[in-house]
Image (cartoon, rainbow, N blue to C red):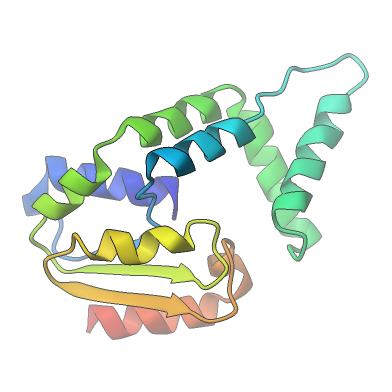
Length: 163
């Protein structure tokens, strides 16, 4: 999902005989304006004596997806905190990846999916235009955390593609 889709494309590009089918959720096919917007939203945190950085990360994740359950928010906060500055490096690697070129070079069937309200929803159709064979599926009413919030819908889409 998102960065994971970028990693999947890189792996399939580097090792095409290893992958028979691929599923990309919220693929990050980003134009320069989108990259600049995402870069502007990257906020590395500095550990503070009073712990204010903890609340800052919590609030940032809550603003991004206000409907998330507290369990998921907590998980995302903990993942963000444990990744530290490394998370910024991962995002920059995605920004620099020749995603479209790599995706266009793949020959295996690819399912491109996204929730209708996913933050990278606009990238799905663009990414699919580079796919030689496969399917595009936009899941109505869902957002960036579709795998957590509606795993049944995700499972149905994957099941249909994998048959």
